[in-house]
Length: 171
Image (cartoon, rainbow, N blue to C red; front, side):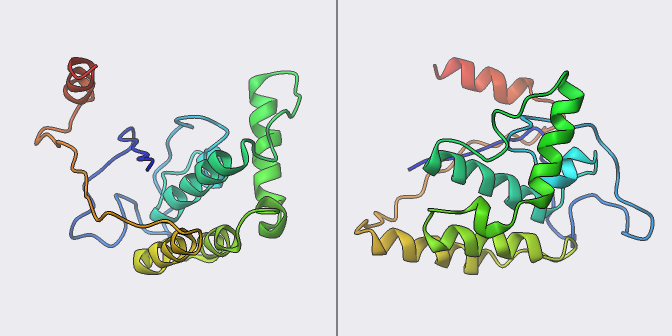
């Protein structure tokens, strides 16, 4: 079991239709690229605040990397970091889902296809996405033990220090 958690851009989204964004007509809030270029979603390369869809896109890249060991934009050569980011962005933007997920179980292509077609303002169908991978999980003979892991969440999420210090104490 792998848990992927990144609180770097986390915000409370309870009770809103889309996390902290202005309307599409006004344009979404802009931020600089945060995280690893390899897993950044396409909108992340454009310095656009991430939507639910964008989070799922990055998660998909991480899952593909874990399964395959590499991503199609790894190893691209450029004169500098900015040029490399541009090349990676162009590759992500133009690669067909079938090529991105070549040699992977069909559920990965279904997932990435769903994510790419998803409306940025609409909440994802998490049930559908879980069912995709639960089906793959069972088809490969795995059994789920139904054990849930909970992670401590602090009330004050204005800074990262509390989470970091807690992680350091548990080393």
